[in-house]
Length: 436
Image 1: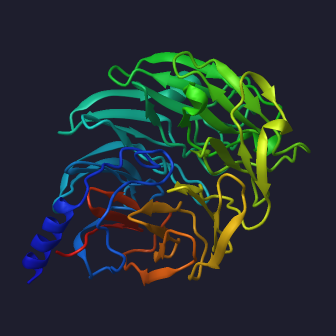
Image 2 (image 1 turned 30 degrees about the vertical axis):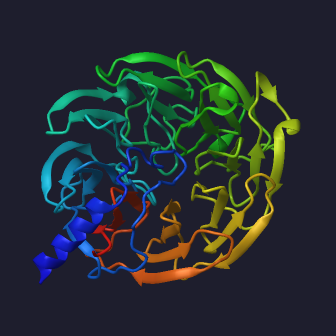
Image 3 (image 1 turned 90 degrees about the vertical axis):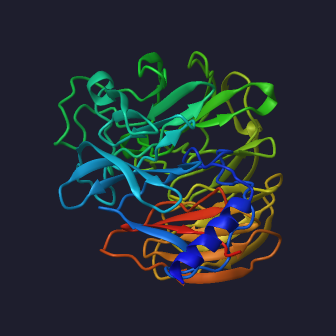
């Protein structure tokens, strides 16, 4: 019976529209996909194609391309960081490699950044600033220690920004404390200030193409951000957006040159206003979330230099995220107050709320929202998962707690790819598919 169920689920998945999930926020960098045929109902036994135990928990999101699933994690028993590749058909581990040792930070570990792939190579990046390139068979192509070359990434809760693959370059952002040796051991001592930067790397060789330092007048912890660089092509001009340390900056993808910046979210220079969510692009606007549940800003892209309030299209000041990156999906913007578990759907052009509702559960949410198949998928730290309808009304379709071994946290965002859902629930990765 189990083999028959697996066969039916496999067939159903193959019939669905196939789209990969190559980067942390998916194929469109906004948390959405065009996938269809995804289940609304599932559990740790219902509609499960396979479930693979992982050696530890981390916040990184699985990356999927064709029949390969790439996962970065930590081995809780040995403290080893790992790069793993699973077979998407059955969940078997095809290969795994040790990539260093974990470092202990509150609420985080060094396997929080998500991998990225172009269908031939998978790049794994860690909070230790070690960057690895593997082919799909697990052969190491190159390795870089960016901490050695560019200094320690000093953040209170440990580095966790994911790399960005865009226009033939691999981009790494480090928005970090400028204080030498901030946050103490076990890092390598650094002499002098450590400016934040955007780095472009040749994905084939691992060599630096350019580094653009990113000046700021932010103070204290506000110098730090956990956000990921996001591409933007509004106005016909490609750019790479970097958010944090009191500014949103746009950079030329070819040279790294700063094109423009906006700095209106922390005018009082509050010293603990670090940034967690990444920028989101949609409906000709850029959406950024201020820290500590403060304000969401919808921005018109700049042209050059420092832009001001005339570039703010609208703002929203209630029930916005602190850690969860918003979702732009089918002409709607979804915001999750991740501590209070309140979901809001707004008109991305005006900021007017369409609806608001409470997400069930007993704890905070640190994963971001996924939009696929006219559904919204959300999971909290205790593996309590909610499926909602994506549309103009608040409608819960399904609630379930995904069983998992161990006591690890769940902060990984749910992935939709190739007709399946991939749910990293603590130390187990589930592959979910609709039956035929």
